[in-house]
Length: 102
Image (cartoon, rainbow, N blue to C red):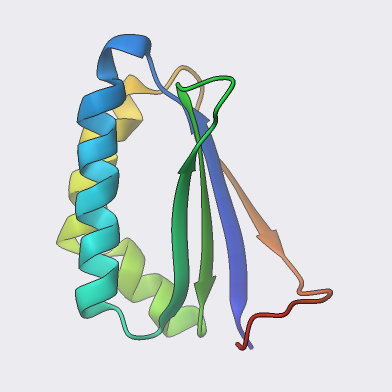
């Protein structure tokens, strides 16, 4: 059963560009190495450019564990987490409807 998650956070203004680079490195890693990460999208809010939302779909627990334990995820954590204003907010969801093939 797929795992659907979001991660929401806001970074300090001086850190936006550095955090965006870390996000891009993470997404590049996911694209190249995590075939069971079915969907990964990171978004920057328009009205508050310090706020970010990641939407993730993992094939299952193994895919989520592989993602969390990757060097790219570790780099993301080391760069972004210290720059957040509040702790990241992770939420897990049950799929209700989609036009996306999972």
